[in-house]
Image (cartoon, rainbow, N blue to C red; front, side, top):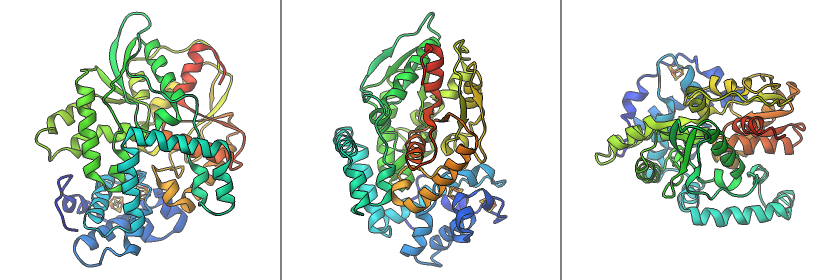
Length: 421
Ligand code: SF4
Ligand code: SF4
């Protein structure tokens, strides 16, 4: 592919793949289709072939790249250290930049840039979505086939939106740290309760918690879709907003956002004005469970008599390589029994906007995930990412049992406050 490559030297990255195939069985889309073109190795081969001009970036070829979940399971198991996520983002950016991407792909980029990245428009969009969900308009439109199945996977609001900024929680007892919390874009609108629980848990553990008013969307969805320019603009805005507060840590309860923010240093490596600050910012970013375990957090004394199964968000387990910390948090809750499901770190099919753009594959993966969760007999499915929360809640609505879906931090918060879930 042509074009500037400020993000990374894709040729160097690509040449690390020795085509051993060890990643294949770990790839959800390959497991479903058994097609080489739907595997990491096949996709890397396609990117190389398009890059070398051996094949054209036809809609068919790009469709195989677009059907990738970007779950990065392949990256986590690759013995050669192929930076698959970075390669895929750059390949999508090249396709978008040279106008080869299909119309639906460009439309998605427009929506992400003009709605998701703009808080005012996103609030209006979310209000319209909420209203149509409340009166059953979306379900009706889906039954009449005006919209696809993906409409039923849209997040449902949990509690009031989170709009707090500035100092949002004072430390209980002696101050141990000053932390800044990411609000993000969709999370404060759909899962305001999770943000409030996170602030309470951090305060309980001696943190003064702030939410910088000037922060915004982390840019993860834009980067995954190949709109690296918008992702960089959002990263710069967050770097200014967070570093101006000089926090001890930047705590994030959304796995996808934390993964993206930990990679701001890479994303802005070609930006002389922001390169150093981007690295400084990335070093401060902590997943909330990682942060709590490192503090260390106070074990709750109240009992939660619950059986809980944990779904690893891909961008926590594979991108950030964090799988023990959320389990340590759950295991610290008295009375809580952790019932591991099969393939807990296999993608649930949410994958950012994947559930809307690739609804069929998304639902196949979701139905398998719900079966695995159901087999544990758990009362609660816990996870740590807004996309996974929305997808698993949709799985329950689709008939995947009666389990409640909760963020891990919500459970810890309930255990501290001795309130039921
Ligand atoms: S990406 Fe890694 S694991 Fe997969 S074929 Fe290439 S070298 Fe092997
Ligand atoms: S990121 Fe996930 S879906 Fe994409 S090739 Fe790798 S394992 Fe497969």
